[in-house]
Image: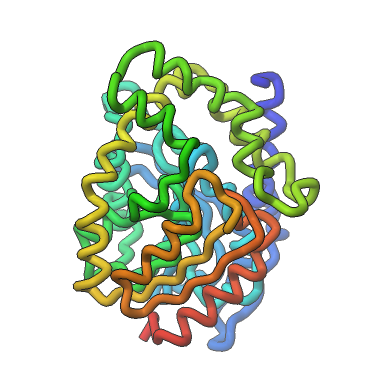
Length: 328
């Protein structure tokens, strides 16, 4: 697998190469401001970390901004197609890679603790570095507890939430998928930790993309092969097992997330792959209990519901932003 890494790095960086040659697709929005249809790639150093991120849409720093937060085992690469949809080009779309994912790099001397509290702090520093005052968040999988922790810290900054299989309720945890993780949380022993290792191999990575999809052959294979190539880097799998263990710290925060939904009146667009066995549809339905301004849609898809459904998602997002006057 490691032998393929340069190939996948090249594929993931294609937009950077295109832009370096001055060939990036650009257009002007309704106000005459330039937009980037092809995502550009960038780096910013903050929180002692070199954060890699993709940006597309409006180049106006005052444009309405959507912060796209990926999940396991992906990176900002999961948004590569969504960011090119013309419907979204009036928005400033920004997608960072979390530490240990994608192309974000963490110096060894940083002694970074790979945990969700750290992810929130890093994304908060990232938001500050880019001077993002207000923004909507798109949360998926690991991006959900990361983004919702940020919302608890900065409720006035988050103007809306788009959650795509991004869970915040106990009833959203699918069993038996979570059973071996919960066994590891309870025991923290080597046997239960090692029982999770197959999930970090290609079959486990690919399954998250294709299981539950009615047309898995249409999902671009470079997505899960890139994820796997990056998982296969030295030391990353042990970091991922540490993150698996730390996920338990999100569950006690669920009541705080739910209280935030109730008290903030933040509008929420929930778009769920109804065939997801990791975060099941009950987790999407649960938002009805607490969110005053909720729009809920189910897709015939699995966990990575965005794959092959990018245009539908873009339509949902634009309609939702306008319906609730998210960006005033």
